[in-house]
Image 1 (cartoon, rainbow, N blue to C red):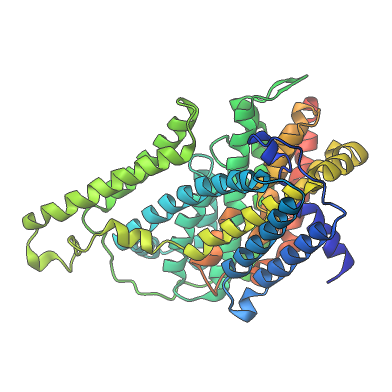
Image 2: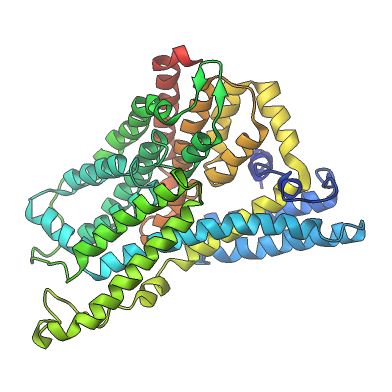
Length: 475
């Protein structure tokens, strides 16, 4: 393990609030273990686990397994040492706080994946593939269409859901063409992350900044302030997309031109999915409830509709079950839940708990001093984006909001941009990238994405420069 990588891993691992347990009601200050063998061991365990995640393509060891094991080891070390120092429940309070963070994320993703699986079973994506093929689009045109849709849909929905939708279309159209699928998935991840950066509803990190109610000398960072990031976000997507475009063969899709039809209930499931997104946004925006409550309410919509499909079976001729109507009785909501990408969901558990443990050890104060005092806010915010390529941007942004550095509106928008699009640098840097690695398993991989990182980094740097230029009045 090289020394620079170790330092980078140390910095990124620390970006989760070490004061989490204190805010959750701990009665004693957390112990500073940053120079203790417990802290060094925990960092080593985390780095080894992440190396195993990165080489999944070669070892075929599912990415969730090493991080889950690492999470258990890290928290066992913390809990054991706290017990020896007379702290009876501080570690428990801290890990419960992190577990709640994960539960909200996992249930949100589970509902989104269930809807995706339901639409896939109802032939929604197959019908869309068929429509695109019959329109006569070649692979390069399809590459741009799916990327543009990802960029335009993610500000309304979230970038993860958008990426899952577009990836399903790419897999259906690509039909095993690995070169096209890899390029299109990279394009989707970059486009979805960029599109989500300029809308409060497009990315969880953007939503966190908006809901925080930050006030700056230039005014409040309100709903409309984020749209100043539209042009930088567009540049972030277009530059790598234009370069990757030339790697795609200029040929027609190698797939059947047979017409495909959506099964009965497909359009209503799409409508319920849109209603679910609206419900989640409304719960958070108007009722001040966690968005996951709205998503789970939306899962109830699908459950009730699935029951409706089942009881209306008697109105469908038996000869139609294998045609456009599909197997109506076969629609079982729990089968759709079971088909969720559990490796991805459990990977997030391992990451949240690992980084939570490392943050609880006490690295946040060190990183805050180094980044926002010694380096300055612009450099620090650029580094935040780079760190979010290794650690999910949610804990990274949560750490920044906990530190609450004194910054101008331009700087707050800069960190929103970098945290949102910086995750595109690596496939493991964003929820969209991790989810697509599971959805297009073996075709969109960590190393497949890594070889295009310099091109993506070019777009990342250009988007920062554009923001510093067009929004200079906000600094």
